[in-house]
Image (cartoon, rainbow, N blue to C red; front, side, top):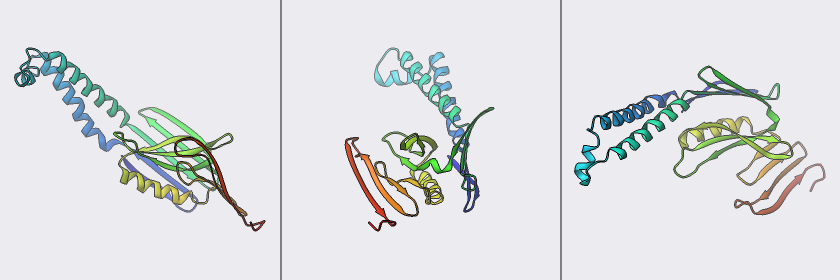
Length: 212
C-alpha cells in the first residue's frame, strides 16, 4: 500500500491510496502457479515430491496446489489495481470517497459532520485494516468504510493524520466501545455495549452550561 497526501491544510485533507507496489510480487505468484500447472501437465512437478514421499502419483495434489496459487495471485493482483481517494472538506462539510477499478469508478458523498472517527482493526492471520465510521440514522457509530489495508506501521501513520484532522468533530469514537459527543457546552462519553457485546450502558457527561 502507498498513500499520498495530495492536500493538507486546516480546512481540507485529500489522501490517495494505491496498491501498485504489490503488483510485482503478486505477478510472481501468478507465474509460479502457471509454472506448477505446466510442469505437472508435463509430468515433471509431480515426480519431485513423489520421490521424497514414496508415492506413485501426486499429480492431483500438484494440480490443486497450482490452481490455489494461481487463483490467489490473480485475485490479489486484481485487487491491487484499486485506487482510492478520500477528500475531507470542512468548508463545505463534505467527505468524498472515490474508488477506481480500471475504468470503473464508484463515488460516494457524505456530510463530514457524520464522520464519527477512524479505527484500526487487527485480526489474526489477516492484513490490518483501517476503517472510517459514518453515522447512520440514530446509530452514532453507524457503518464503516474501508480506508486502507497495509502494515500496522503504515496504517498508524494514516490514522494519526486523519485523526488529527477530525479531532474537532462533534462525534468521535474513543475506542471500539466508547463514543465521544461534544459541543461548546457539553462533553459526553458513553457506550451501550462492552467489548463482548454485553449490554453495559454507562454515560459520563460534563455540562459547562449547567456547571455539572
